[in-house]
Image (tube, rainbow, N blue to C red; front, side, top):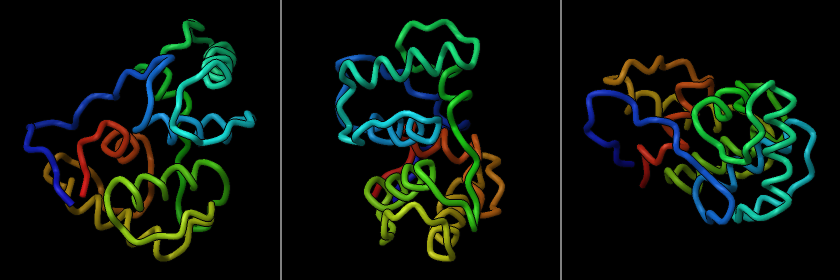
Length: 150
């Protein structure tokens, strides 16, 4: 795993229709956690755009279909040991595929997912990231920004 050397966490990425690959798949998992039914195919097509616009409306944001800091802040879901669901799949996907921890992406936040989250947080502790094994807004931001990779 490598971590960028900036003095602060990287900003939330801006993701828009037509984008492909990281972090679109994670975005799709998070949208599914909010009741949408998207294939997490990492392609920001019309169905993903519609789900983004609907979520933006649900959260009282401008429904422009572009995922920036305010939209990310609204759709991220804090997950921890015992959590289950699409948001856990998104976190596991980031930790497994993007960062290189050997996890099963099954939507169940267990001991292995918690240990991976803690290892990531240890690598980010110089940026003020709390090492607690909980994937909250700061850990999500570090993962989806591309700040960490293997």
